[in-house]
Length: 302
Ligand code: SF4
Image (cartoon, rainbow, N blue to C red; front, side):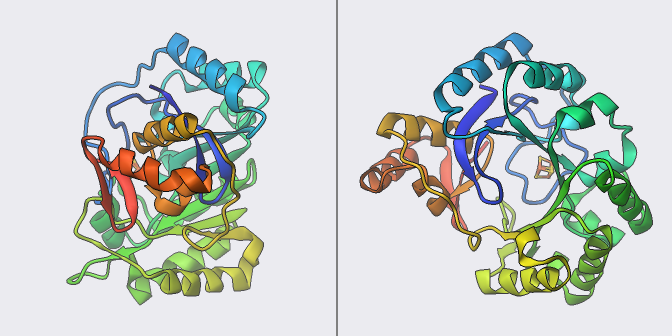
């Protein structure tokens, strides 16, 4: 399945999800916390299938949400047919399109104008700024200098609203991007870029890294807020979630399809279910082979 959800995105609220890549991961990064296995497959999604699934999801859920998040199993900008797909989506559906990509694609690809004009917002993953820390966390396919990263993001932000997503983690032997020197440099860079939003989370995935406490994330968020304002800072686990009540079956299906593409917290799952259904759905989900809960995130082991 290419279309998933609807699910509660911690920064953008209720979204329909679209994975344009398919089952195998295609990404210029190899993050230590990535829940998807490495692959070198080409991106050749079945367009007819995607359109059919989108029409189905739009018919059912467009009264609840008009947001479509393109994210899952890698970097959608590496998909050859993205431009065609986005034009189609723009012509047929009335959806606000949010595309999640990586800083590498922003710096190394020439993003066609028709992609930029078909997308409303871009989320850019950027966990660190010094080459050493980027290598430790993201294992990028291309090494880029902090200046190139910063100037590419500033250029993009002049064309389209950008939201920088940062995952902050540490290990006992290595502080990764929670190290104070790294964090200061990253914060300074992001403040210079002045994005439309900063999205902070702490997601160790299947790695042996540790999650930061919510209080630590809030402290980091406070520094961003001093410069950018709280309205531009979202913190996973702290920023409030809206609630909707999907029926038991619809809610369960929405969550199961999302877990293939997007790890969720208990609160994010509960926010689309009626209070009475939460425990039952979570019990059923934990019976699905390969679903695990690690550090408070429900995700699928591959
Ligand atoms: S950017 Fe996302 S898909 Fe790519 S390696 Fe990192 S976690 Fe995995």
